[in-house]
Length: 313
Ligand SMILES: Nc1ncnc2c1ncn2[C@@H]1O[C@H](COP(=O)(O)OP(=O)(O)OP(=O)(O)O)[C@@H](O)[C@H]1O
Ligand SMILES: [Mg+2]
Image (cartoon, rainbow, N blue to C red; front, side, top):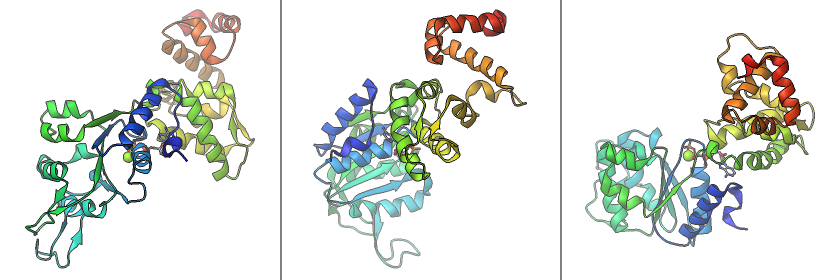
C-alpha cells in the first residue's frame, strides 16, 4: 500500500504537496512542515516516515508545546547519572530512541531560543551528547519538524534562529488551510464519513450532495480536525443514514453569521442569514451564489424578491 493513501487529496494545491512529500520521503533530508492547527501535519509526517527506507525503524514524536523547557531537554537528549540533582539513572533521549528511524519534532516554533541553539549540532552532525556526558554518539536519524507559524516571519521577528531554520527547511512543505483548498472539503467529507459511520455503528452513513457543497462554504478554522469532528457528530446524531443540509446547519452552530445572534433564529431567518453569507462569499455574484446553494438561478432570484431586496443585499 502506498503510504500516502491515507492522506486524502483532491485539490490541486494539496496534490502538489503530496507529490513533494513523496519525493522527500525518498531522501534523507530534514523536512519542515508548516500549517495551521488541524491541517494534517502529523499525518503527513507519518506518511513520509512510512514511505521512506526507515519505515521498519521507529517513528518517535516529541510534543514541544506541551513540555517544559527542562523536560524537553531531557526528553530530546537523555541524560547520564548525576547530570542534575535528581538524575539517578540514565535515560535515552528521543534522538537516540529514533535511531534508524524518524524523529518528529512537533511544534518546533514553540522552542525557546536557548533550546533552538542546542538543536544545531545534532542536526548538523547527526550526533548527540546525553546531558552530563562528554562523548557524542553518532546516530542515523531523519528529522521532520512541524510549525503552526510561518518560520520566515518568526526569524524576522527574532523569535526563531535563522541558522536553525536553514538547517530545517531543506525540504519545506506548507499545507494550506482547508478554506484555501475548497476542493478537498467534499472529498474529505466523503472519505471521513465512511469512517465515522463505521465508528458510530451506522454503516452506509453518507452526506447528501447538496449538504457537501454547504460544507464547502464554511471557513473551517480548525481545518481537517474540525471537519472530522463535525462529521463524527453528524454520524452519531443521524436519525437516517443520510445527513442533510439541515443536519449540517444544526451541527455547525458556529457557522459565522449565526454566531452573532443571541436568540436562536427561526428557520426562515436562518436561511436569510445564510443566503447573505453565501452572497458575500460569492462577492455578490448571484449565479455563483445560486450554484453554491444548489438551487436554480430563477428560484434564487424569486427568493431574493420574496425576502425583500434590502435584506439580502
Ligand atoms: N488530507 C487528509 N486526509 C485524511 N485525513 C486527514 C487529512 N488531513 C488531516 N487529516 C486528519 O485530521 C486530523 C488532524 O490532523 P493532524 O493531527 O495531522 O493535524 P496537525 O496539523 O498536526 O494539527 P496540530 O497543529 O493541531 O497538531 C487527524 O485526524 C488527521 O488524520
Ligand atoms: Mg500535530
